[in-house]
Image (cartoon, rainbow, N blue to C red):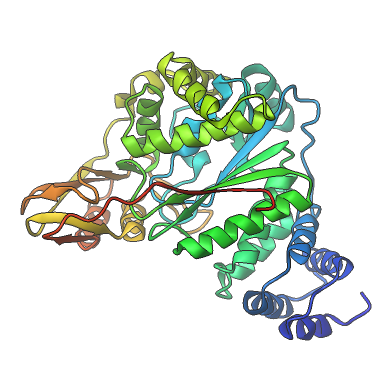
Length: 440
């Protein structure tokens, strides 16, 4: 390596730049067990405090990408687009925007991980549909993309293994929220997945990983810069997560809301965001042949003519899922126990603690604390009131669902503390905050 690893830690701690070769060797040695956790922990903390240049960050991302197998989608016809969200509460956008874009001719080839924390990830939500398979082989993944134009499968265990090792270490060293490390983690997996173009939804606010607009803008710029240096067109849309997206929080509950959205009956914020994201994917795939406004209009048309809903059904059938659950979401059934959350006083809902609402959903059984934990697909929350709504004292603000009575009681007590109610109606916040292109 030229320098001992302890010297590299000191070098980074002093705010100096690591070379491409040093970064590549570092990732290789750590992945292969030649650098102990205690030394890599020190390096992560040095990066957390000193940051990384775009060149360093791209070198680290590419080294993480190359630490395992990569997916070659060059044989897939058309422009392939991957969409990733940095997460939030009630964020079911992939289930809506993906089929809309696919109905417009965009090829959606997505590998997604399981969720940790509040609710399941996209994979878990899809698995709440009986029979839906996300453990596809590479051959099945490619065949389904060719057949339906959209496939969402579980992330392969050998995709960017360095990221898995580093994430586990970040989780126990208080470096999870480091923006360069988040950027490298997301982009290493997206680049390894092999799509032609990448759309990032970067959430910000009380229910997001990054809480401030400034931090989210920095994260978006770092990720799009990596995309540019890696030769991959990347666009980021920054969205507001100061309240849950839509009204449903929980796996089958969110699938039901996504199906309603594809029928043109979704909540206003879900429809607005998904039209924006799908329109962006259509615009990116068009390579300048259509304007943003035309792409957005196409997205709306694909919902109105039913083709987006049919695309979700095609994907569900191709992956073994029971399509009747998309047509009739009441088949998901309700959890054994239900509880109501009511307003403690009359007034306007001034603020919702979105992460606290997400935590309540996890307490009900909708999420997992470890990758080995099981998920209750029926558990979750349906909000009946959101920020800006007026409520009377004792009026219902949410309904909780669980299959365990003790979980219900603890979640209800927690949920009751997540609303701030006052006498003045708050100003309405924008949902779409910014759009950042590669190199902005």
